Every structure is written in structure tokens, then in C-alpha cells.
Image 1 (tube, rainbow, N blue to C red):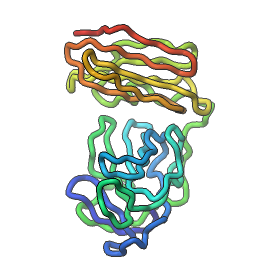
Image 2 (cartoon, rainbow, N blue to C red):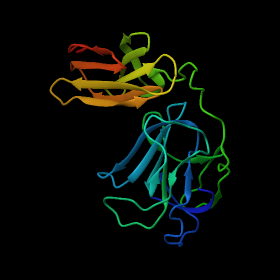
Image 3 (cartoon, one colour):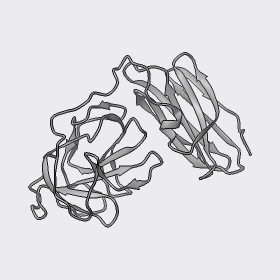
Image 4 (cartoon, rainbow, N blue to C red):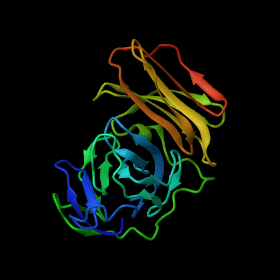
Amino acid sequence: MGSSGSFAHTGNEIDFNGSANDGNKDLGRTVVAAAAGTVVTSAYQTSNGFGNLVKIRHSDGSTTLYAHLNARSVGQGASVKQGQKIGTVGHSSAKYNLVAHLHYEQRSSSGKNVKTSFNGATFKYPGQKITSKNCGGGAAPPKSTSANPYTAAKVCGAGFGQVDSAPLGSQGRVYLMYSSATGQNCVATVRNSVSGTVAASAYLEVRGKARQTDSGKFQYYAGPVRAKAVRTCVKWGGSIGSARYDSPFEHCG
């Protein structure tokens, strides 16, 4: 949104409005990306009440979330610039009866909801008024022909180290990562270079549990797919285009 007031939830989320009591006057206003990145979610979500949600992963692995949108302007896997339109303000939700506003969150690379910062300064909860300086575009993401700026460590987040990997032809690799702090495995399929989008997938199956898969058309990577697997065997793998890797049950320690 552009110039705006705001009010905060009891957590680290922020609900943005032009003014605190303007009802649905913000309906249809433009929502832009806080920073350049890759759209990892663009969907209507029902279980959490977010309604139309866009989630963007940035170069440091952190993410920003934009919820209750009236319309989404970008699809999963799209590269977006800072200041690029990603949707419009709405009140969509399968759980709540809302007035139009933008629900906004910043999350760390590990997925933790953190206090929001704007222009290097932490938002003053619960009700600071702030004017956007991000309505005219910004730095572009890496060129589509460049080397991939993402690694499996960036995709999975802080604390994950590599356990195994497998090549997917000349197009990239699929990685199995592990965090001793959380007991979680993480699988990410990472392209070697960037040239448009391509069908890709990543999956993780903990013995005795259902397989989790992330698949679609992506520019940089598929995943991360995370699951707790302490001293439990896992199957893992992924694909880029027609190249595919599927492991047996292994890494049982």
C-alpha cells in the first residue's frame, strides 16, 4: 500500500489500513512487494483464515506474507521486484468476517514470525503510523540467465547442514539437509542456473508417515520440504524437467 496508518495484532503481524476506522475504503488498493524475491505461495487458503495469500521468499531466506487480498497478481514461482504490484487489498477469509485491510508478516529463514522492520527501523508496536517509501519499484531480482543465487542452505534456513545430495542431469541437484537443533530433515531441489521457469519437485517421506511434496513450475528451487525424523529412516528426492532422483529408505541415524 502507499501512505498509510496501521494497527498491529497482539503478535508480530501488522494489519494495514489507510486510517484506523476507514471500513472498506481500502478495498482494491495496490499491494506491492516489500523486497525482491520469488513467490513461493500464491493461493486461496482456508484452514488459517488468510484467504488470498501471497508469500515471497527473499535472497537471505526470509519471507514476507500478504494476506486477505482481494486479488492476486502474481503466481507461484514468479520473480518479483521490490515495489512490484502483487495484488490488491481485500477482506478475503474462509474463517473470519473482515473489513478490507492488508495483513502483513515478516518471517525469518527458519519460518519464525519476527518483529517487522521498515527502512532499517523496527515497527513501533502496537500502532505506529508509517508512510510507504516503496511504491515506485526498486532493484530487480537476478537476471533470468544468471547463476542461481539460492543454495540449499538458504532455502532450508539457518541451522541446516547437508547430509546428502544427488545430481539432476546438468540442470541442478536435490539436497537432503538436517538440523540437529530441531531434529528436522529438509529437502530442496536447486537449479544450477536460471532461465525462466521449469517443472520441478522436492519430496520427503519419513518412514511410517505420508510423503510431503512440493511441485510446480519454479525459477530457482522446489521446496523446502521439512519433517522431523530423529533416528528414523527417510526417503527423499526430486526432479527438474525429466531428470529425477528417488532414494531408498536411508539415513536412519
